[in-house]
Image (cartoon, rainbow, N blue to C red; front, side, top):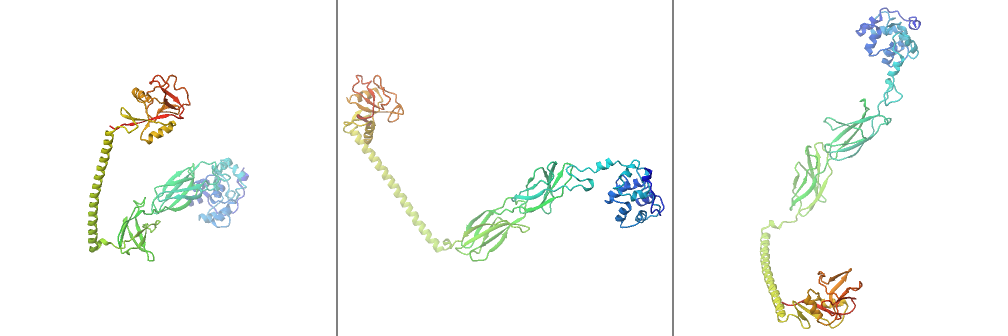
Length: 510
């Protein structure tokens, strides 16, 4: 070990202990390795200290020479650099409480002297050096001195935006599929503090933005240990909303009043409105206002005008246009006294006519009422004179008509209705005996519909006078009062609706 650490010294014309040389230069006393270690914040063999600090491998005099832009023996290089004369054989010679000639420390190539450095007492083990060179998690094939740069998010894009929000997205950086990370997003407009937020997603919606304002957005990748990537940057400008509900409030011959509503989101933003109007073939008239309405004057009579309004910020940025059209009045007759007088006379005539028409309507209504009352009296008089017409039979409060010809069930009902009556409906024992007294087989107003017997007026089929065993055929759908029955209260018979006499019933005149 001694032969490797203490070889012949070259270029040692200078005199003086190395710790004094370094100590005075660095304002530090003590062994050289401690001086260099504390100054460079690095412990270990001197050639490693210098090599790592200067990012140069090779003989020490070449390292120092290139670093100091000086060629020559190492002790001269050190002497001139440190502005100190003296022996250099002990310069950098003591390391890790072991003395070695300086020329070995300075002249040995770091790649060739790993084994010699390990032979010096209390020197840092090679394993520890390798441990310090382990790559950081998430990066392969790189040591501490040449660590890979953490990639920034890829393809930062503004997907959509409106007046107060914007959606941005990006792609995951390459090589981070198995690495825990998130993203830090910072955004601001000129003259304001950045807003900072984080997400583990690959997109985010930025809200509460100012309308019509340019924003800068940066996104960076952040590992669990806090290490951040370079920034991905983009810019966008939020939409400036146009005025809402542009309306023509009034128009006369030479002026018009228009109004609109303030666009949403501009309560805290300084802005005004630019109004442009023109008629075909003329130059546009442009004016501005901070109000939400304006009166356009000096217009041409009976002319159509196009009107546009837009929002304008202090920086000059304009919104999209909203537009409408209006037509000025050709003339206003009410502004001429003679025409006003003529209109007044015309109105008086019209009012007089309306009053006359109202009186005529009242008289006509009165006449119609009297005519109706007369007709009703005539009708009542006729019925008082004779409660039932010729050929009809009165019983109780009804008149009855017995046909002299035969019809189907439906045909008989049709004939009855043509006379203002309907098939007879039996409501009482007395009425049953009365109808049976006509001594004819006659239809009555009962039918079977969907398997259920009903009266033709849809009243409940409660009172019945069926013969013994009736009804006995499911296909029979009409009812006759049969003269074959010995008991008039048991004379109903279910029969086919083919042909029979029929009886009509209607109320008699009071």
